[in-house]
Image (cartoon, rainbow, N blue to C red; front, top):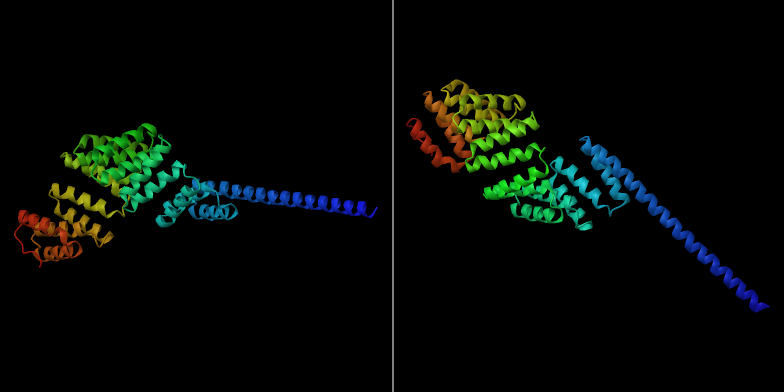
Length: 328
């Protein structure tokens, strides 16, 4: 009888232990599900903020999503996108790194990390990441565009145009890719192709100030001075704080022999960017043409102080303009 009592007690104890284990497992699973649901909720809200351009709010919610579920590759990826838009490239790179560690087949993360590597000057890294993104997803238009940019900077213009062509077949509504292909074509000497691509970029994005400016450059190279002036005026209207816009328009005024307006634009370019070496150089040349040798000398001195590598080119241009002594 005593033995039966002990056995019954043991069985009851085991049942209680099993029930406690099951209950503990259920509570753990419930907690995990709750955390996952909370993470997903923050992730959804963050995506909404990101789509509205509310970057700080998006990042705050991505932070919370990651705190509840640090295995969410997509949360790191999207936080990296938000950080890259805020030009926090180090933070974006770290997020894309982590997203790739968690999900090595996330093509978008490879493509975006390639973009960050491009803007930070790591051209080989940009090409390598873009290659991997395209390998994972051959329809990665962004990766093709990013690889085209890196190839263009490495002076592989044929390869760059080929990448931009493929990217545009996949995403023909992206103004920036037309603009990029236009830049590659301009560097190839294909001025008509460059103008055509800038036309498409502007049609898709009418407030694309840089596209107007670069179309103006291609038109000026073709001898269309009036067309260039129209484009430069529009570029400055859209972005009056652009020093390069005023610098470029000054070149048109020089072509037209309007030195007063050229000087006014050089003045504005320098006011907007006091370290714009080329602007000092060209303003000095304009002043030299107007007989203001002393003011020209001061501009030449400042130009070479900012960029000594311009000396040879400046010397040549001074000789072509009017004899003047070069600052030592």
